[in-house]
Every structure is written in structure tokens, then in C-alpha cells.
Length: 430
Image (cartoon, rainbow, N blue to C red; front, side):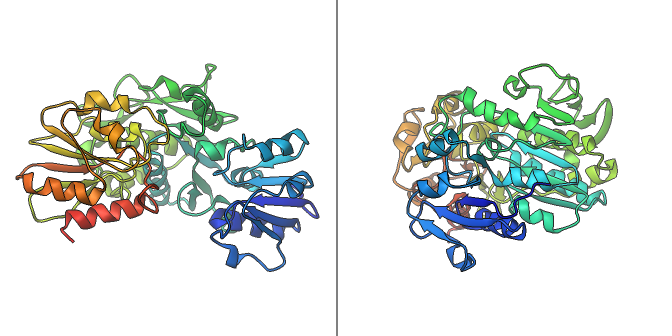
């Protein structure tokens, strides 16, 4: 437990997370003030009237006169004003660091380029079904600090690379980097820099869970407390249609609600994490049988037209779209919707997955033209709605329409949820 009493603490960034930091620090009797680079930040109206607020940019005087800065994960540490504070010796942390300093219950920590929300929510369900009083938060659901208000026996945290950059006290009971593929290349100077941010999750962890099919998830030095998940030759693996834990068959794949090879890997990772934290096997099995997956993550849209419409709007990077395509059975034709803001990513990894005679790409948004160059079977359109309108006359029984954009949504939508909701409405002809 840290003492923040009477310390001058500047919180950068409002919204739900920023407000949770303000509330936490005021309870600790700190002198709190808030900076937000936006002129009209979300949550400003919820800020207590006696908390000073500076908007529209960074206030360097406030930063340099702080005892501690709590930075939003959305603001890069490389920002010149932040680097000024670093050079002046001001301590800079994120909300996850504040949480880790206070938490007394064990933490399961999950990061990765793809699948982390699915694995986090699945592990949460496993613990809940196992009778554990469990809280879930971080980069999913509620801000981590709000979890401290409940008397939980276990915390399950989804953590982004941005959050891990300013986290130093995480001592996870079990931790994983599910996979590493290009994402946020507009923020990191290289894939290796992005990977190193992810690997922070292993520091001081009791047990680490690595992906046996992705060497980028391995720690830089060999460790003893390591478990591996993979299709075969691992601690948690697939065999004859079964999920297997350390040689013991646990559940037939057909007994799970979630489908696809990527979800089989997610299930293995979740099993390893949950067992590493002592979750009872009965709870793990029950959750695997009943967990239906997340909205906007490879989700079938119920329609009556005989076409399979799949909403994978949460595929905001190339690796996620590759995961969706890898192992997808295409009985007839696949119409793939790609586009949005690629955040500086290299799209070429998609090429071998889409250059097939029965796959037709409809590309839209900021990086639509770059994506359209990957395959001769590509059509460039302005919007997703335009893409669906062009596809619909060609559809026959057995075709698949997949929204798995490989890009962020913010060029044309508020977020990936709005994009997914729009796709669902278009699929239903609404």
C-alpha cells in the first residue's frame, strides 16, 4: 500500500478510467488535478468541482510540479512534454500500476494482439462457475481500480501494451502473451518494441503461459515456471477432437459453443491460466460448455436468407483477420469486408489467405485502396454499406459474408461496436 496523502498528483486523461483514478486518489487524500488534451473531454461533468481541470493540451507547469503523474494509456510516453517530466524525475505510472500496488487477491493477467478479450472473459466465466468470487476489468469491462471496491478472491485483467508500459508492480498468479502480430505500428518504432511492451506481463509472474506456435510470446530468458498451449506437443493441446490438459482429456471440442481453430487455442490458453490460479476443473469445464463468445468477435448473425453472415468487427488488426480466415471452412464463396484505419500496419500477411478464386474482397475506408491491391478479386468502395449493397445481388445459398476488417474503425465509426452493429443491420436488410 502506497501513501498518497497530500501528494500533488496529476491525472492525464478523463473518461471512465481517469475518473476512477481521481476517485481512488481523493480517497487517499491526495491533491488531485486533471489534464485532458481534448477541449471537451468525456466525463468532465462528473469531475468534482474542487478538482482543477486543464483542457486542450498538456500543462507543462502542472506536470513538472507533480509528485506523481498518472498517465492515460492513450498518451505515448514518448510525448515531448511527458519526457520533460521524466527528465525532471517525476514518477509516471498508469491506473494498472495504482491497482497492482493495492490488490491483495491473486491476479490473472492477459495480453496479446488478438483474442485477449475472449480469453479474459472465458477465464472469468471459468472462475465464476468454479465458485470463486472473481472480478474482471482493465482493458475490458470496468476500470481496474473500481474492482478494489469489492472483496474479490481473484482478479482477471485484460491488459494492453499501452497499459503495460507504465506498470511495474504486477505480480500475476498466472500471465500470458497470447500472440504477437503487427498492431499499433503508428505508436511503436518496431514490432520488437511492441513485443517488449507485451512481455512486461511476465515480470514477477508465478506462472507464465506461452503460445507454442508463436515464438514471439516466449520470454527473452528461459524460465522454469512456464506452461505451453498449442495444437500438439504442449502442456495444453488438442488431440482427436479433444481439449487435453497435461495428458488428461478435458472436453470434446464439439461440446464448446465457440467455434473455429482460434477459439480452440483461446480455450487452451484459458484452461492453462485458470488452472494456474487454482480454479476448480469442474468450473473450467462448465464454462467451456456454456460460454458463447463476445459480441463482434467472429459472431454469426441470425438471418433467414441461407447466407452465413459473420460479424468479426473486433478484428482491428491484420493478425486478427488472419486468425478468422485460418481454418474457416468456405463451402462456396467468401465475401470479405476489409477496411478502416490500419494504424501503419503491413497488410501483406493477408495475401496468402485471400488470394483464392472463391474469395472476393470488398475494401473501404482510409486504407481501402491499399487493401484492394492485395488480391485481383478486390473491389474498392467508399463505405461498408456500399460493399454490402454490391455483394447482395451475387449471393447464393452457402455463401459467407465476413466482416473482419484488419483495421481500426475510427475513420468512419465511433468504435468497432458501432461498426459491428451497422454490419448486423445490413445483414438483416435493415
